[in-house]
Image (tube, rainbow, N blue to C red):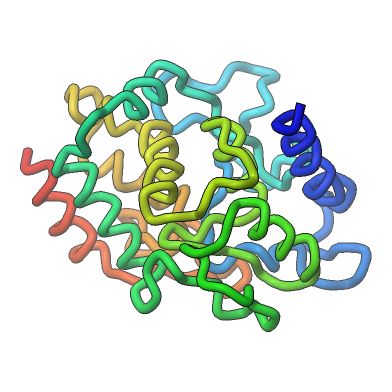
Length: 252
């Protein structure tokens, strides 16, 4: 019962985002930029990263702006249940996944690591993120509207954090430890196609471009962030550096 109340509370917390979402406008009713939560960030993607092409009439279109679906400006990444179950079931973290996560952290939170809070947040949490429970994090988000809330090593924004917490069935009492943050990020790595890369179904560069569609601090093969120019987003590492580190994990 308490878990259901927790999930409902998260949904209520994020519900206003759905009211504000408007693909034809870059402003919220307050006049603030809609993308306050966008620098740096983890986002829900507008289209599948790996697999079949978009179907005519599908909600997953080529545009970054996807309207009101799911209470977000972005369509959620189509779930990859088998990959998610597989990555959650790993007893040990393989070296390649550890290297990928380290690269993401270098791009998103090079200074504060797992205790990083988006620099634009004027009202920061009273405790370090790794000492906070998930309930405390969402309470901080709820109590400090109108500012960025990206948090942790992977700079989760509220909508993505809520989605991943629900996916892993984590309660409000769970502490936002490095291990928990890693588990949340693993779901996104599965969605980005890490197992397809391992199986040779996509190339390393395709996987890198997929990651860049999730984390704005990573560059695409163009050398720029996939979200370059949106709310000041830009890549924080070069493509050469990104490729060099990924080659350590996936040489071929």
